[in-house]
Amino acid sequence: MTARGAIRVLIADDHPVVRDGIRAMLGTQDDLEVVGEAVSGSDAVRLARDLRPDVTLMDLQMPELNGATAISRIREHDPDARVIVLTTYDTDSDISRAIDAGAIGYLLKDTHREQLFDAIRAAARGESALSPAIATRVLSWARADAPGALSGREIEVLGAVAQGMSNKAIAAHLCISEATVKTHLLHIFAKLDVDDRTAAVTVAATRGIIRLGG
Image 1: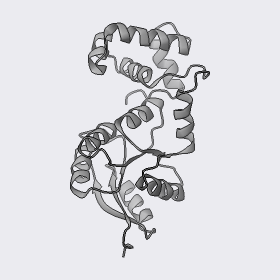
Image 2: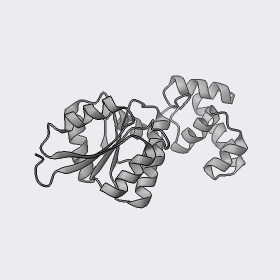
Image 3: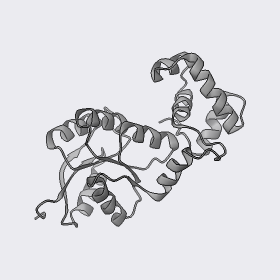
Image 4: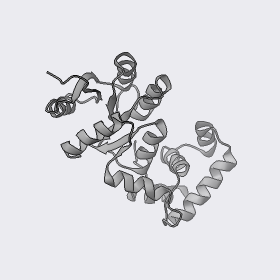
C-alpha cells in the first residue's frame, strides 16, 4: 500500500515493457505512486487532465502526438503541470523542443533508478530535474565563448532544414520572416564552419545537435 501523501506519477510511453519496468521501479518507493499509464501523446494529455498527477514521465517518441507537443498541450490546460522527459534521445534539438514545451526535467532511459526517484521528487517540489549531461548541454547554449554553440532558435531552424523544408516553409512554421530564416542560416553556417545547408545538417547530426529522421 502506498504511503499517504505519496507523489502521484503518470507514465507516458508506448512500449509496454518500458511502462512495466518503470512501474515496478517506482513501486519499490513508498512515496511514489503510479496513478495512470498513457500509450500515446493524446492519451497522455487526456489522462493528465483527468488524473492531475504530481509528475508525468513522458517519452518523446509517442504515437498520435509526439512528446513535446503533448507536454505543450498538458501545460496549456495546467500551467503548473510538471513533466519530466524520459527518453533515449539526447540531441540538442530534442532537448530544446522539450524544454521550450515546458518540461521541468529531462532524463535518459539509462538513468540510474535512484537518480530517477530523486528527479521525480525534485519535480514534485517544482525544481528542475536534468541529468548532468543534459544540464551541461543546456548551460553550453548560454555560453558566449562556446565555439559552434547554436541557440535554441537556430537549432529549430536547422531541424526544419533537415526535414527538407524551404525557407518559406520554415518561416511559416516558426512564425518568423524569410529574412530572419536566412539570417539564422548565415549564423548557423558560420558557427558550424560550413558553406551550405547540406553540410550544416551533416555536421549538426554528427555533433548530436539534431537527430535525422526525427
